[in-house]
Amino acid sequence: MNPLISAASVIAAGLAVRLASIRPGVGQAELRGGAIERLEKARARLRKVEMEADQFRVNGYSEIEREKLNLINSTYKILEQLENYKNETIYFEQQRAINQVRQRVFQQALQGALGTLNSSLNNELHLRTISANIGLFGVMKEITD
Image 1 (spheres, rainbow, N blue to C red):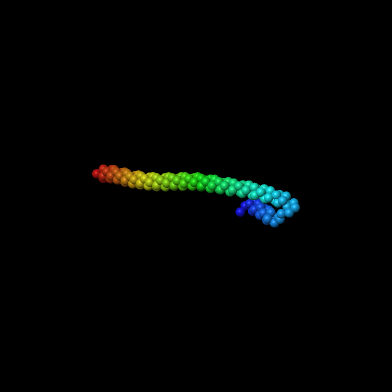
Image 2 (cartoon, one colour):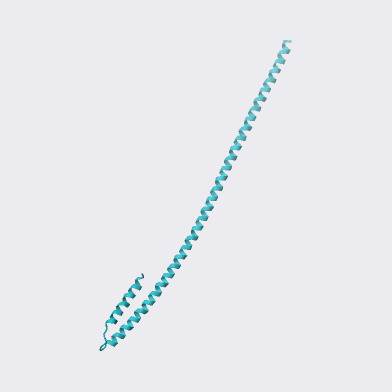
């Protein structure tokens, strides 16, 4: 409970007790009238404080709701950013994997081409050697004939 409301309630209760204890007599009517007036003022202050407390409560609830909505909105923005970062990371990793596969395929193609060239050169070298030997045998045959 609001401390202002509690204090106003205590004051009003105290005035009511004093008012009840006043007995009719000389000057008592004036005292009683003053007490009634103070009691009414205390009640008016109590109503004012209660209305202010209600207003603070309403404003507090409104502020809480605004803060809650702000928190929800900022959370959604953060989640959206995280989702974007995740998608960018996935795209980057996919591109990296594709590039690695391309690089391996290219390396294998180069190795295959190099192997083909090497075997072709070896075959050509063998053919030249055979041709040269045939030529030598031909010259040797002419010499022996």
